[in-house]
Image 1 (cartoon, rainbow, N blue to C red):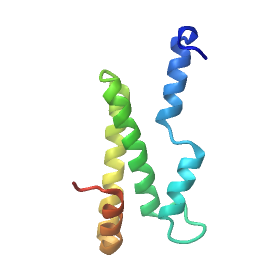
Image 2 (image 1 turned 60 degrees about the vertical axis):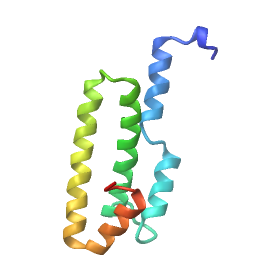
Image 3 (image 1 turned 90 degrees about the vertical axis):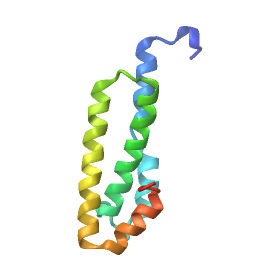
Length: 107
């Protein structure tokens, strides 16, 4: 659709598609972090999915600085990831270090 004909609703819809993970991206992340063939819920997978969502929200908030609703959602996701990381560090420190390294966390 030409830019002149785009409405605010079209722009918001396009933006919402970009903020959430699509199925292919999610499957690719699961594929690279899974521990066994049917794994979708291990801490490593959950942390990787949360990290991708967090990165997408950070990009969104760089453009939309006053979107406080999304900012709150970002803070909730960061807390959720923090709890998952703490659990993984407590139960399997070696896997924790591997996830941190692969995701580039802990600057």
